Amino acid sequence: MSSKRKMIFVTVGTHEQQFNRLVEEVDRLAGEGLNADVFIQIGFSTYKPKHCKYRKMISNKEMNRYYRDADIIITHGGPSSFITALKYGKVPIVVPRQRRYGEHVNDHQMRFCRLFEQRRKDILVVEDVSTLGEKIENYSKITKDMSSQVEFNNKQFCKKLEREIGSLFE
Image (cartoon, rainbow, N blue to C red; front, side, top):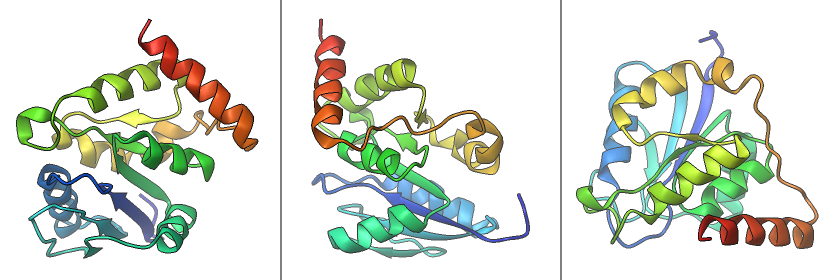
């Protein structure tokens, strides 16, 4: 990584279950010397970061500021979170919540994110958080030829997204 400190924004959304797996891994990476300032919106996670700034919830205004200013955005697998990153022209690292870790009621985020990544090729899905450090370290190289394809005409975007989501269940 370059000598300039990057800004990493992590959001786990507002789902009522913890997402300690992601919060702990980002905090561990920060403690090991990420060349980045990290802010985590931890939601209902019970783990409290020791090496990152964090808050349980933030306002929509703050959230949008972090999305705009961050060099790297890491989100849970909720479509609203990673689509917002795309809206800001960022390629998000998406870590879907998994049922087996008590992070959600089922694995719909994993299934949806895999399909979204395959079809659109503008998100990076990380299912195993032990690979997150590598994705962060090589983010510029990995995303060099990727770009956000989100259309800014909301009506057209919503219709296209609706078709894509519908086609996932055919």
